[in-house]
Amino acid sequence: MSISPIRTGRRAALPAIFLAGALLASACGGPPGQGTYPVRDIQIIVPYPAGSSIDTTTRALAEVINDQGTLGKRVQVVNREGGAGSVGTTATLNAKPDGYTVGVLPDGPLTLVPHTEEVSYDPENISVLNEVTISPVLFVVPEDSPYRDLGDLIDAAKARPGTITLGEGPLNYAVPAEKFEQLTDTRFQHIAFDGDQATTTALLGDNLDVGVMQLAGAFAQLRSGKVRALAIASAERTDLAPDIPTFREQDVALEWEAYNVVVAPPELPGAVATKLSDVFGSAVRSEAFTKAARDLGLVVSGAGGAAAEKRLTDKSAAAADLLAPAQ
Image (tube, rainbow, N blue to C red):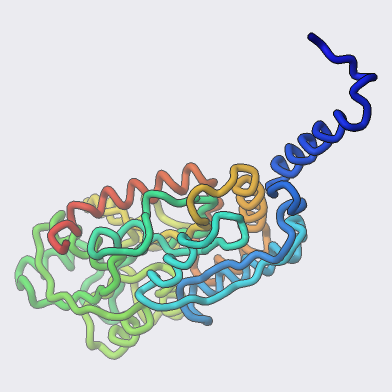
């Protein structure tokens, strides 16, 4: 039996109004009764201290987002350092999936660390929103080093196995260092450093033969001529340092890059994820952010969530065999 719309009157119209409101709120990314997302400021967690490279990059990104104003609320950077990035990564991925906590994270805690230790988050169950920057890995030597290219280094390493010092440390350096040895049938004396600054100090003091570093970490010293790069582990040369040949150009099939990505907890509502991805993507592609990133020696990516997630998955798989023995 059908009911005439005239006879239902206001009493029957109210549920329809509430339903329409709920659908509208859902479409805007907010639960019924909580308004259009976002209704308050959003925190961006950075898992390293203030002043670090990723912190500087993220603050430049946040400034662009706030200046653009398309989000409707402000974003605020919160530093949660510790555990080689695991503290901030845990805080990001275990937060409530409501769109008010996101993280700008290096890929290491997502692609490498879970292969070597127990973590308090699931690296395969996350909301990947954007890829922000790329930093290829380099082999760097002091300016007066006798090694002019990879061929010189490989020949010397084969002639004197285990004697040439190779500075690495974090997994994003240790893995390509080991892969290089496998590909070239060489063996080096590995020395672990906490990061690029410590490696640079050792290189400048002639206390290290070769340093494994990111382009961003070596950028200033490369431009000053105090160090030289033997090879860059990107698929092609980068216009930030066009004179540095790739490993593949020198017959070593090594590609290895570090990524900074925007992620959120799993099960983020689709409309919220879309809005955040659009806002962050627009900021990454902006002229202001591009200049800030390039000044730091970072390659601007801007890849969307699906492409960024695939890159993380592929890198994790590539590292699995090398890191498995350390489990």
